[in-house]
Amino acid sequence: MVLLGFIGPQEIIILLILSLLFIFPLIALIDILRSDFEGNNKLIWVIVVIFFNLIGSILYFLIGKNQKLKK
Image (tube, rainbow, N blue to C red; front, top):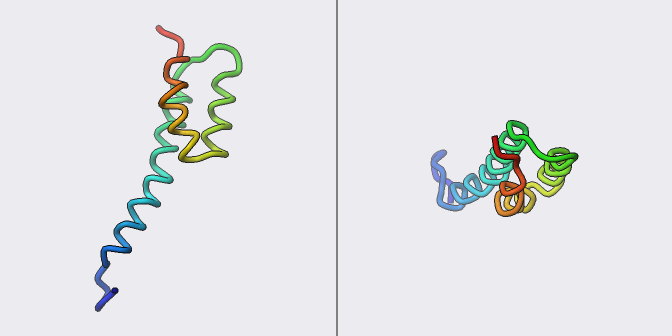
């Protein structure tokens, strides 16, 4: 319940979920663009993260990080 402009617990939970939906994919995209991959893997990971926001970024951090080229 919002009383006199104060944010209630429901709004805080919604804001946390929305921030995760935007921040987690953004971090994944920055990491992808700064890294080197073989062939078209970089393009594929960018497309996956853009179209499947949260799931794509989780998949990238689980699978894609191992595909980066070592310097």
